[in-house]
Image 1 (tube, each protein chain N blue to C red):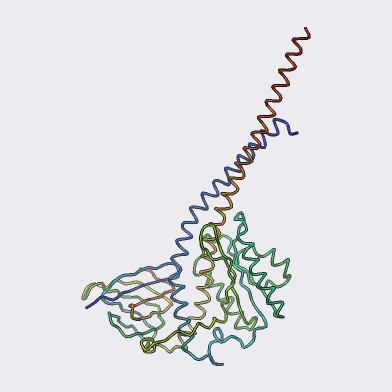
Image 2 (cartoon, rainbow over the protein chains, first blue to last red):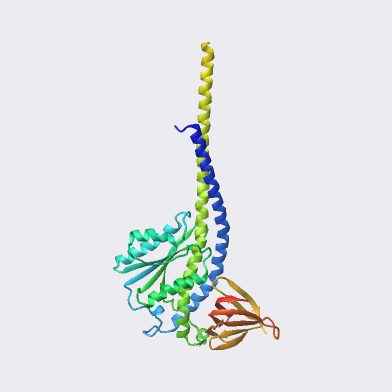
Length: 292
Length: 86
């Protein structure tokens, strides 16, 4: 049985832990709000760009002379999974859920006999992926020290990936991230980003057919496709950022509550022991007095 | 004449969404002005400044843009720029 002093120490230590988790929860809540705003502000651009790319892609006939980012390399032997996670922990299962989704995708591809490589953005996925797929992590982008993802970072990552693609290092690229639904739910997603998934053929009416392109469709598309990769990554980062803080807030809320429960339990134990000690003392005094 | 619905969007945020008289856009093959009722048109942008005329004959407001493209459709003009300031 722990002594009264030990219990008191434990209660105090849990109390200070609770203070920290409470503070972290409030910081996460404040950051969450801003991250959500940014994620929402980034959506119109991503949406418009996706619309334009898919409508253009539906318009040109994909041939050998088409940009490779849309036509593909003609093979699908080597896959690259870009895993975007957080850099820090203390956010529940946020990062490990993303890695789990990426791993499921990789396992499925390997079962089909494909070769799978990883490119990681954010630190948290590295140890797990290295353990399950040793030597398969071919690239990494360090996002430590970056507070808010900027478009220029996403662009650098996209350039790196597109270069590798053009060098023929892989045929298909997927992007694994968590979509921010609400504070409580982030859904891990694995989307194909290269080559562009052929859009459902839209009903291009007469009005759309009259659109003039300057320069021509192919040139615009060649310009837009790398941008599309960058914007997808940027969106993934923004969604992740918001999801991360949401997840951290929930995790810290739980931790604060658990600490509270623990303090209650320990206090009860402490009081019982204190009373027991008093009772014993009283019994000793009374029986001492009776003996006289 | 009805005003032109104009949107300026960057990856970071939506900068403008307003009704204007005319916008002059730096297209890659030359600057062009867009007013309401312009034919559907799409072009990539070169680095340069957008000139936004809130009213006919008024002083234009300039916004530097770089990279991206402009799309003119039934709904108006949408400029998707990678960077914009001004």
